[in-house]
Structures are given as C-alpha cells and as structure tokens.
Image (cartoon, rainbow, N blue to C red; front, top):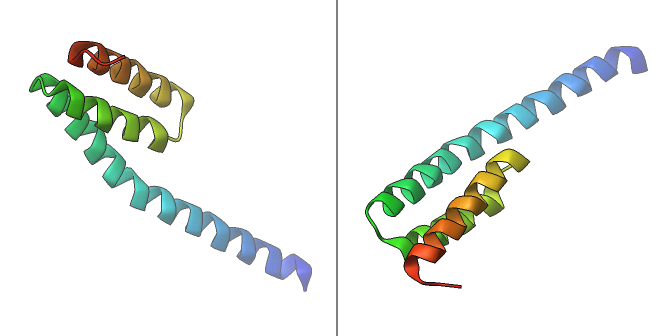
Length: 81
C-alpha cells in the first residue's frame, strides 16, 4: 500500500510546487521590469522602493544580490543614505 501511494504523493507535491513557482514568476518578472523602467526614467526614489521589494521577493541569492546592488545605486542617485 505504501509503495503505491508514495509516488502519487510525490507527484502531487511536485505539481503543487511547480504551480506555485509559475504563479510567483509573472509578478516577479513584472516587478523587475517596473523597477528597471523606473530607474531609467530617473525616478530614483521610486525605483529604490521597487528594487527593495524585488530583493525581498527574489528566490535566488544571485538575483537578490543584483537587486540589492540596483537598490544601492538608486538610493545613491536619489541622494538617500
């Protein structure tokens, strides 16, 4: 009984994880685009807030590091500490 149910349970968990990843990917991509567009539009304080939000939402360390770097640049350009 356990041998038959385990693969089904594993498949259900993987499907749920994939569905959650897809639902968070679209808003995060949108957030990345808005933050970059806002920075290029020279609205630095607004861009800093968006990069802060992006950094907190990023699932991977390399993406977090990039968002924090952009956050620091936007804050410097806005004259913020």
